[in-house]
Length: 392
Ligand code: LRH
Ligand code: MN
Ligand code: MN
Image (cartoon, rainbow, N blue to C red; front, side, top):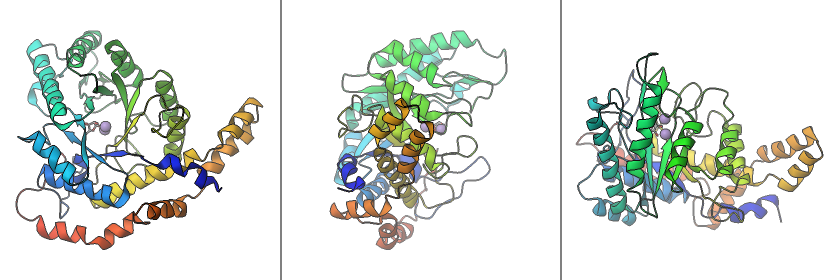
C-alpha cells in the first residue's frame, strides 16, 4: 500500500463550510470592485456555493450572516439549499453595522442596547431552528479606541451576562461558538481579543459553548498551532474560520499566504483528535469553515481553490508518520523529528488526490472543470438586472 492509500479513507467525508458572503462583492475601504455574475439574492449565493460542492465534493454546507442573508421564509430557503445539494450551516450574528452599537453591543453600558443585541442573537437562534443549523457564531466588534475610554472590567462582566442570556436559549443539539480577534474595528482594546478570553467566557457557559479560531485574527508571528493544541486539549475548539493573511485580517484564500502554517494547524487538529468522524481517536469534531473575501479574483474558483487547499494540506498532515515522530521526539532526536514532519509536508499529493476524486465521480481537476463548465459565462450573462450583493 502506498502512503496515500493508507490515509485515503480518512479523507472521506471531509466537509468545509462556505461563507455566503464570499460570493458577494467585497473590497477594502478604498474600493469595492464589482465582479460580473455576482449574486443578487441569497438564493443565488447558495446556488454558487452548491456549485463549489458539485465540483469538489468538499463543501456540503453554507453559512449565513444575519441580517445580510435575512429572508422571510427560512424553511423555504432550507428546501432551496437542499434541492441544490447543500445544507444551511452556521448562523453568524452581526452587531457591527448598527449605529446603536457604536460603543458596543453585548458589552454596552446601556441595558436597552444590550437587550437589543441579545434579542438579535435570540432571533438568530430561531433562524437556526428553522434552517436546521447547529452553530451560532458570535463575533463582536466591541472595544474602544482610547485608553480610559471604557471600563474594561465592567465590559467583560456585562459580556458574561449577555452571553449567558443567549446560551440559555441554545438547544441540546446546537452550539454557541465565540470568535476572537485582537484588533479592528477597535484599535485600543477589543472585548474578545484572544483565545484565552474567548475560552474564559465560553467555559463559564457550559459544554455547548466553544471557541472559534479565525486564522486571520492573530498578531503576526503568533504560533496558531499551539493555540489549536491547547484548545483541543481543553475540549473547547469548536470551529475554524480559515483564510490567510500577509498583514492584518486580509481574508485571502486559505493556504495561499503560508501553506506550511496551514499544514501545521491541520497536523495539530489531527494529532489532537479534532479531525473528522473517520479519526479513531476523534473526541470532538471541529467545524472547518472558510471566512474569506474575493476582491479581485472570481469568487467561485476562489472558493474551489480554497477547499482544495484545505484538502491537500489535510492529506499531507495525515501522512505524518506519527509513530516515527513520537520515537524521534522521545529519543531527543531534534532533527530526526523535524524531518518526519517535513517529509510529510513536502509530499506532493495532487496527483493522488486527482485519482481519488475521479474514483468518486468528481472531476480530477475541479479548477479546470469549473473553467470549462460554462457556469461562469452563464451567470455573467444572466445576472444582469437587480443589485449585485456586496459583502456587507
Ligand atoms: C470579523 C470576521 C467575523 C465576521 C466576518 C465577516 O473580522 O472574521 O467572522 O462574521 O469577519
Ligand atoms: Mn471570521
Ligand atoms: Mn475576520
